[in-house]
Length: 36
Image 1 (cartoon, helix red, strand yellow):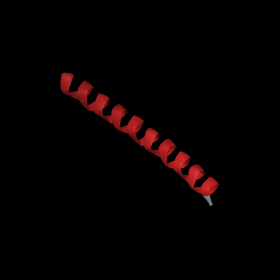
Image 2 (image 1 turned 180 degrees about the vertical axis):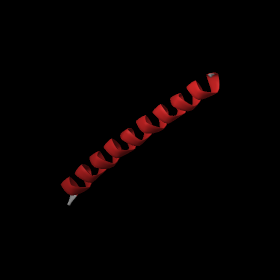
Image 3 (image 1 turned 45 degrees about the horizontal axis):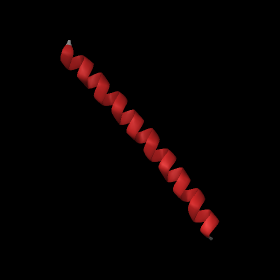
Image 4 (image 1 turned 135 degrees about the vertical axis):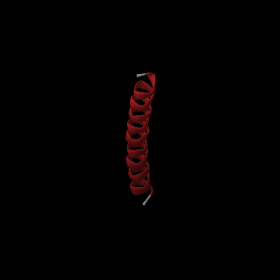
């Protein structure tokens, strides 16, 4: 059971990382649009 929890936690961290990266990209695009 512990092993399964660890793998789930790893997957969640990976998903959170991707989400934060996507958000950073969106924020950067918004900043570029504002600059123009």
